[in-house]
Length: 218
Length: 253
Image (cartoon, rainbow over all chains, first blue to last red; front, side):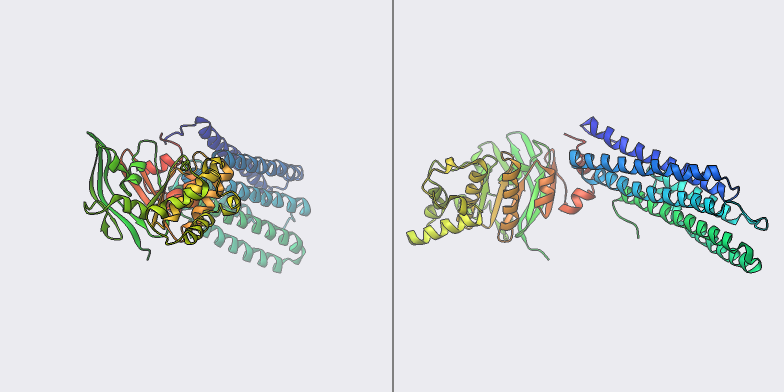
């Protein structure tokens, strides 16, 4: 990749990217911890996740400020302009993903503990798929790889069908044992939060392709 | 389908032994703004000056190829370059009003080309040209003052009024805003937008943002070659050529 005549410009763009990746890694950690809560409930861990979300919000504000200054200072064109636009968009998507991870922890704080008859780990399995696909979306941005980005939407189809299966499974559980109705409802909300993260990972991968090709995929 | 006003076909320009332009084929659409961009010495001003035979005045300059305006070869030996330049006006980098009154600056062209029959008619033509150039309200009470007494931005608009007064079909602009402050630049850009409804405009500019703002078509020149031409929106968002991309993002000088 050719460098700009003004070397500061490259530094600005690189710094924008590394800040965004740092924010992404933060979201990844939050998501990883939140998904683990669906298997083993841990109240102090859940509280920590909710609290950590503030830092993700602050990261988004910093990226927005930095991108705004870079836009006004450099008046970028073509691929440089797209780099900044997608950094702004992805940062706002990451902020949403952070919220969803924090919401998972919030639901865990609400249910406090799992009923003994609740034995399935299907939501944890759904979470693993979501986490894997989110990591892929993030590395497609990091490596500016269209090849990796293209895999993400296809994987999301699998995630959606696993989500449907989880939903039906929990309906059955609730019909069989109405005592766990309250808990299962919360778990279904958690599944929905995870499914949303799946969708948002897909949006990130589309932004990556837009950056590389200059055209937004359908 | 937009109509082509100027067709240039395989233009080569030499200054003595040095080749300044190589095989340029570029169509200029009618009543649209075309901007020519590229680093200094890339040939964009040379190309602009070919369009109204300004290069004729340079002895060592030799031109090959064809330039057609409305299908008519402008390098036809029977064609009078003075009449051609009335059809294809030019505005330069530095405002260059004649050392005459504001009125006479605008009236000069119509007078020598005999475009008006009476002094009343001339008066009206000067007024309408100044209005089209967005200058009339600022100078209507001092039309007899020297053109050079105006500010830089006003002088440039006076030069545009002077170019408009002879009812040209095409206006060539060679970095018309490079000597102006941002406000005067914005006024000229607004003016370019306005007059492009009636005139075909070709503008050479070093400001990418200006080219992106004012033009419909952009042509990128590099070392005497036409690298890329396309709709302005496309050239500045998704250029097809690597060289264009590197230039507009500041990676080559």
